[in-house]
Image 1 (cartoon, one colour):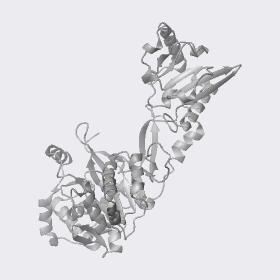
Image 2 (cartoon, one colour):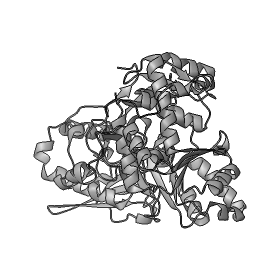
Image 3 (cartoon, one colour):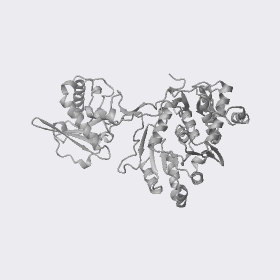
Image 4 (spheres, one colour):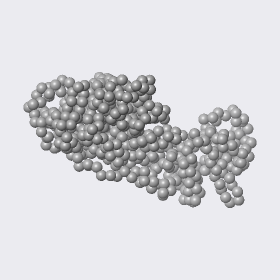
Length: 519
């Protein structure tokens, strides 16, 4: 049963005499095979009995000769009143039998396991005993140890995320609505170049019209973009979406073989690089700057981003407009971005974290400051951008956050130049407690939010406010965002108890359509 609660459980330490109340015999290891077999509970008990008999053949060997250190996290004993709880390395189950009463006392190391998980473990044992006649001939792996209340909590209470959002809108429709509301507000800033919402809307209309005429664009067509960060990159992304196609970011700094693979896999009708952008720009006045006729539905593709490809060729993840709209609507509700705020775009656009940097501001009337290529790795350049553009929102991967915080720590006068910051988001890798604590020490008064999600689920699926708790062993990934459900399941796709370890399964609006050219 322990394998249902502990991901690293492989077996348990005991001894023959400890099972009959005598603590003088040597210990031995009982390997768990429930994951690799389909035995009934009764058959499993018979196997354990046979294994104990086999172990007795070696009972005379000194336990010092047995390398049990790696197996010492789980133990079992019977009527043992001499247990010293302080010496427990992991979990020790001591069963006390008196008259007709069976009592289970669990000793544990707080650094190894949380008390709440053991409370669920105790409830699971109780359920087995109460329903032993039902369990005895059943597959051990099929045991449902969850109570109805806990199951309801896992399925519904923790995933009570269903809310309305603009499910009938595309990203472009939301952007055009915003451009109409505040046409003269500054939308994009890059190295001294500014575009208002009106100017940005008009030039992206021209690019969209150009692409439709030249390449006969239809929904779900793919258009590659291979540009360094600049206002032209922003124009190209929105222009591609205006045309009705989905954009495919291709980092110009990728190895050539990766670029070749992506271009071949997508079969893009055009790849917008500096040359192609220049061709469009020189003839842009030939094309209408008015909003184009809508050809997209919310279920059409908005973008396609390739995974890292650490195990073979990268895979193109297809994300629809409705998934992205849901993600951005949730973010605006959770962390409102006002028209007077500025977001910095510094994430390489081949990573999906970049998507909310590229689009969030555009549908809520804020301003985007585009960092030049390379600045994302240089705290001094970032601080200059924050200061000059009064940036209020920024994203870091935790590793770069550490670099940034250390720079601020070594240059305390720079804190005056980043006073405009209100919110810092982190994602892309695990945030450590040290990084969190250093953040609050150096950047007090600024919110720190930990986001988590795979490319296949529209950027992020969970969020955690790092100010919520301080007495924790690790920074959580938090709770699911709107219209997303998260489940922790075992190898048999059964729900895992609260506090136990399993695999994360994601459901909801944000899940990708699939991988390009994969079945």
